[in-house]
Image 1 (cartoon, helix red, strand yellow):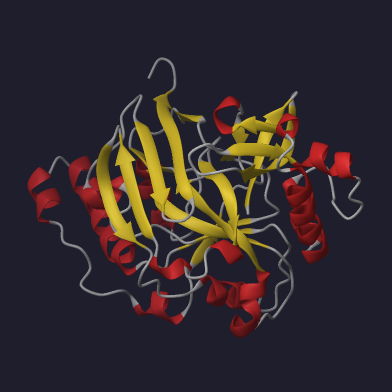
Image 2 (tube, helix red, strand yellow):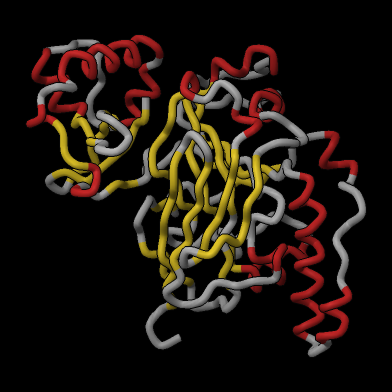
Length: 330
């Protein structure tokens, strides 16, 4: 199933994508569950459904089966405003497990430094790392980002006024179906609810400055609406192999990145096992994969401009589209 959250009468309402791919519709799950009187369906939000576990998921499947033909319970997908699938996740962690990005990103930061000193020749001479630092191979490195700064498909991203270097990041990720502590990697797949696309918009000039303090990114990542998730969550059973998916980024229709999810240094299952060591995880937490190789402007030395439309596409999930705008007066 593909789960969404959409705006309905001023409320954030959970839904499911139904119908043929050429004519998709959004089934209002709350209204559908009321019609059939399904007691095991938890209303209010998609996070409620995730937290309620397998019993609620089974109940949702019954609701969809019984009501999918009731046209008054669904809306054309183009007629609704899609919100982030989980507007406020309990936690958001973003990893860095793609070798290409790990080798290329430091070179991008060196180019920023060289240009700040007016040395374009030095910027042009920068080379990517020859190999991945061992620490990235030993463990899945991650940082925690602002779970309240989440936006969804179609949203305009107004860039913070302290930054000039506007960048996107092509990622995908998982929402956890269950919590737990000290989870074994061999058991972790059952903790994955489903997959979504993640655009980790990044203020690269701010990130360059603050990461010289040898801590994780802060204002380079955490600004209003900067974490974009969507367009929906595709449940785990729909994507049996997430480690061979085509991943593509276009800006104003031009392909900037054409890659895939092959070669991740650590699987999502290994991420779950690592983070849960001595730490209790909660249902609904989000884990980002980190940027695929070549999946951001920092790596390919191309930067976003006011009004650019960024589209991230991940095979078997869909397309996440957003427009980037500079604040008025910038």
